[in-house]
Image (cartoon, rainbow, N blue to C red; front, side, top):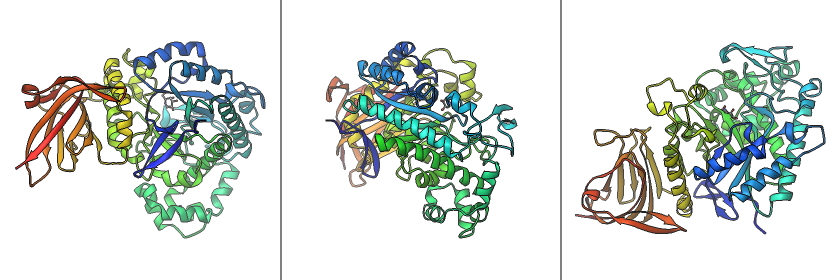
Length: 534
Ligand code: DGJ
């Protein structure tokens, strides 16, 4: 009997194990409504095949799972699992419960209608509904993170889902991770303002929680850490956390809610579980969902939601590499459930695996890749810049090549997760173009007259001390000796090729002009053996 997918600690990194083998989710997340129809999904699976993906992230919604209280329907879940198996793919289900993009879109009608039992958040005192000026004047309502009845009902439904997945899938491990809720938090204010929320906010901060944060300042942003450091040792939220009090209050309660839902599911079937995040982009809490798992409150989520294994950023912003760094820290593996499908998408897949030893990379709405770039996608992806890659969609053939190549190298890659034997650089970080592996190194130049593209990426994997595999595109590769005693370098063997069933298959032996100038305008996989001397 196969073991349940789990996270294994390896050299300080967490690696996802599926059937006891390390697995990288080279995945895609479908548009929100597509997985509500097995029939509609046929074409979507085809697209996933065309992109070489090994896993799909699919919403499973509370409204369709429990249309009447206590009456469950898992026919859709069964249909999606059957389709995944027929296509040889894994699944990550996304539980759209009380939260979806900081709202309650996917709560069943019986929850939405019963506002006494399932209380709404009061962004403004006494109001269940508000308009948020800073957010395009949108009308806004969501369920309260303080409502026990909602949390209990949500947790019950989620546990039923996990029970069903265990019953139909534990022998096969088609479903390998589950996301609990979607982009949680409160818009429009840093915290709720009901009488109950006010009373709790004026009450004492749980001492163990305050002590935990003080002992884990590295899991907080600088401003929050400063507020925590200068607050009172005990007292009300404002006394203990000062200017950070409202966001910390929301994060404590949102994480507590999501953690309770996750724990109820894990008790039945302990798959690895994640919580995804609508990122903050500079404004105050409430201009982004307050209480959601933004990196600035990572410590709160660690404390209040221990059943959540991974905090996962949805990255549509342009400072992609910085966000990766914010999330790949403090033992949190890099797991990107959503990212844009524009021209940076393929290189970023290679980069996250090579640089951050990512567990999951998953473009959102991958169905669109290669098609037309619509106005709404432009808005989502921040098209109003001088970067032409933001205004075009990722090329499908190249994405497939990247994904196929990473898949074919998976055991080699995962064996090096958590070590310096796997590194990558990307054109988006021009300041950072050098990779050193003991006595050898590589520079990957990504701009200048020799380079015709602006989406360069280079991943280098050290096979043995002097031999390397290189995935490269849009760059010029310059190997060098990093050994001061032996500063000169020679190439002993140089090939391009591919992996087939884990075996390296050489295509060409490269030398002469191809060894003198290693410049790549199309994706290549290379194997190179170096020799340093004096
Ligand atoms: C982030 C959400 O998590 C997704 O479900 C989707 O709504 C995307 N935004 C883009 O629209």
